[in-house]
Length: 308
Image 1 (cartoon, rainbow, N blue to C red):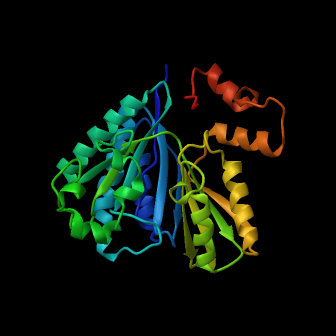
Image 2: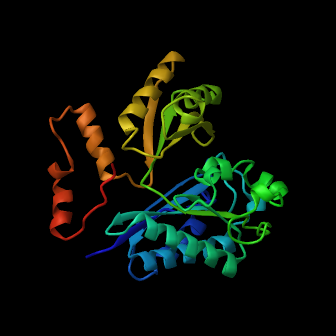
Image 3: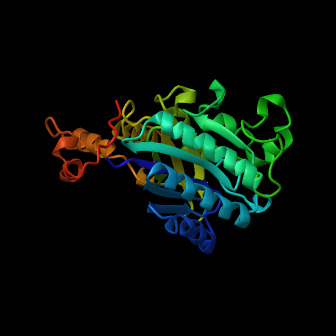
């Protein structure tokens, strides 16, 4: 029975290719771990690695890449449009096959202690590993970002969950947790007006009355000269990708703006693509069982987690 965990760390580096390659290299060198994707963007100034493997090996790869990031990334020099609190901004573990969420929570806590004890970076725990209800979601932990956290980490309500209430001098702090699969989804607009993107994001995100389990921000992508609605779909089962996309299309039309293209950062769960096919192609009774690759995985003994 093969046990598979995914890890999707986000690093505060999206411009220096040599640094991104160094981070990915640490994962590639870890035995029993498979690096599936490397995504980065200079405007967000952020890169995302996606790798899978047996739980302990994945934890080792996560620590190795985190240690490299602490060595190479200086938050005192970092500026980008994406919220962040450290060189290693967030490290989530996701159960994929024959692994429970509780096991991923244990992995997160073990890694958090190792990051503090060996690297001196304080750690916040989020999502299923959160120690406080207000820390289940990242926006609360990232409030004020790196610059603000420097001023507030000494306050009791801002103390880290692991480590002392002080930032690493160059690497800041890190968030570690365990979660369900999410979709990082960006939509590019036919305008450079960031106000339009922010208005659309406000209509889409849950916190301002939009769709449940959707986080959204409007940003300007300077190297392309256009605005973007950048989103996290925290539960693609309850709020499917087509529903989010259709709302963005409708809101964009209100401002006389078109969608140029969209992108997925990292990888996307199979069930999300099944839902897209079901919605847009109207395939009758379409399910994961109709996907050749999924059936082959079952024959090979890989039982993917089914999210309800």
